[in-house]
Length: 174
Image (cartoon, rainbow, N blue to C red):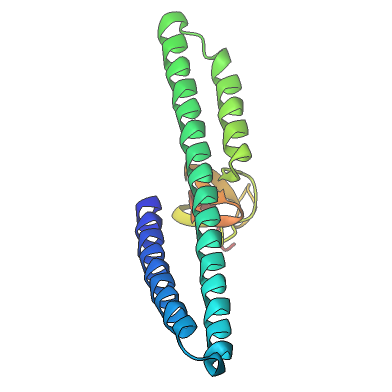
């Protein structure tokens, strides 16, 4: 995804640089012309300034995207480190009391990045966020209730990255 944006950035940069070069050439030629062409030169100058501002805006946006990418990479590295710590601790102690704390830290890191985990059970199915993998029949539980998460789902800044795969209850007709 970031590589594609870099390619788009490079293409747009080349296009804008080419347009800037063209407009610069036109501007030089206009200044060599007579005074009655002064207004056309002014228009070209304004266009040149606009294109240079566009290039500057494009550079600023690219830098912001690079910063966001670096933050994401660093957070994922922190998450991977926490995961390693979990397995090391479990391997050494056979105690899983720290697992919950580690997952809370992972969730905190993801939240800081704008990533929300879809993993709630005992809620009604919401097809925007859930993908039904399996249906069970249990008349003791509410109809269309998420019973189990098979694979967590994720939102990024409110946009669905992946729906949660779930097991849902469907009460039998009595």
